[in-house]
Structure formats: C-alpha cells, structure tokens
Amino acid sequence: MTFSGLSNLNAAGARIMAIFAHPDDEAFAVAGTLAAYAQAGAEITLVCATRGEAGKITDPSMTVSDLGQQREAELRAACAAIGIPAPVMLNYHDSGRFERTRHDDPQALMNVDVLDIEDKLRALIEEHRPHVLITFDPHGGYGHVDHLQMHRAAVGAFFSTGHLPYGGPQRLYYTVFSSEVARHLNMMDSARELEPERYGISEGTAAVRLDVSAYAAQKKAALAAHGTQMGPSSALGRLSPEHREQFEAQMVDQEWFSLGGTRTPIAAFPLPELLSGVDLSR
Image 1: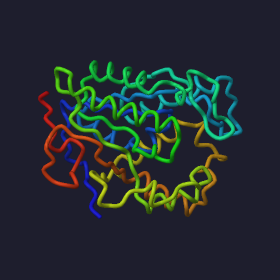
Image 2: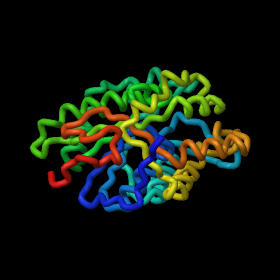
Image 3: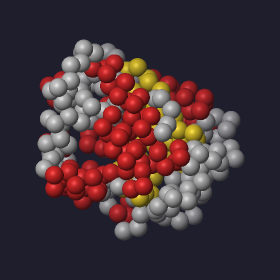
Image 4: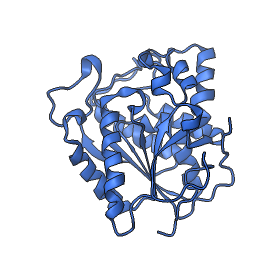
C-alpha cells in the first residue's frame, strides 16, 4: 500500500473547504491533511454545521454549563492547533443520537430541509471560491444522521456551483477509512455497529492516501482540544494502551480520501495528493 508524503508540498494559492457537522469531526478525519496544506500555503475554510450541544461530556472532572458554547470553543482551539482560521459556524442544532435524538427540534440538523443547508454552502463557496471540497462519505463515516445530512448538502453544493463564474470547486473528496480500520474501530463502544465491508472502503476505492505522520503532533493536539469528547469515559479513553497505539497508527498517521466528483481530468489513479491536476489559476 502506497502513502504519499507531503514534505515537499507546495499549495500556494490553493483554496480548500472542509465541510462537517460537529466539533471534533475535523480532528479525526482530516486534521493532518489540513495542517499540511495550510503549512504549504493553502487557504483553508472549515465549515461546521452545529455546536455539538447534544453530545456527552466524557470527562467527569469538567463542569460545563453550556455544552454548545464549550464545544465551539474547543473547535476554535483545535483549529489553532491545526494552524487554520477559526471555523465558519452554520448555527444549526445538533440532532444527537440514540436516547439524545432531538426529533422535535425544528432546527436540529436532521429536521432541516437539505436544500436550505445546500444554499448556505453555495453562498460560502461563492464567497471563498474553493478549488477543493472535502466532506463525509455517503455512509457519513459511521452513519450519524447529521453526517449524512452534510454529505447530501455538500454533494449538492459541489454539483450546483459549477455554474458560478469561477467554475466552482474542481474536486470533491470524501473522508474515508479502510475496512481494516473499521474492524479496529469496532473495539470502540461508539462504533460497534460498523460493518467493515460496508463502512470501510477497499484499497482500490481510495483516490488519495496521505502519510500525515509529520503532522501527528498537531493532530493529537487538535484531538486533545476537544476535552469534553476525549475524556477518560470516551470510547477512545477506554482503549487499552495496546489498542490506543494501534488506533494512533491507523487513524493519526494516515488519512484516506475517495473521489466524489471532478471537473478536471484525472491523469492517474490513485492521485499523489488532493491538488493533483487542479488548476490553481482559477
């Protein structure tokens, strides 16, 4: 399996927009990649749909009066650790999961018309003119309803913004992981429902595989910034030292992407990096 290193990356003039649902989504899936491209000169825009206020506090030592406010502050700290600007918040409500699902909240992301979300993303794309979009895969990573909503809205925005004067984003990438990683994640309570061959992709489906080990310290700092979610009672916090080491080797040092759409030719597959073949003069 080949992973592309990013040590000689030149991303001056590139504009990348990453679109996710909750604070901490960015830390797991793409923090190393965003750190690498930001350091190489790319302009990064991170869009977060909700403040994650329906989540759980996994650190018993923390006293939090407003979880949404706290998690937004954690996201801002994570962005600083990654080396990117503060996030753009869409101000929807977290839909929650399981017993915390907010069926009756009209502003919960699950209850919002996906075209309304797409319209907000279209406006941001028109403003920031990204060359590349990054968002959840069609399974929403592990099936969270808010992830699925943002996937649908981001895909819609990619295709409908091709009419913009600058031509719209040239590439759409999905954050993904392998079936091997999915099997490993099943050791974590929050992911036991994952079917490895459904939620994890085959090697041949990966369009880009990046070695982000050089940015592991920034990625770990971004994860640690989400203190309410990374406490001792979190799924990650309950891992044994051996399994924690395996997790870090598989989820911290490498990041995978599949291709959701393109407006430019693909010269080779897999691609060496996200900007391969992208015209940065637009």
